Length: 60
Image (cartoon, rainbow, N blue to C red):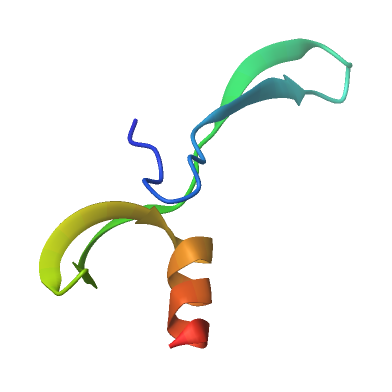
């Protein structure tokens, strides 16, 4: 699974807990997108989470 290249967000681990309280392992995966973005005047492809994309769009 890819990580966000800006903030480093990656998969987190936890447990599903059923009604009977039986716990099984699960994984929380971040919403990662591969985007083309301009960095220092050059266009690069990066893996970014949607939170970072939203922040970058908001900042301009």
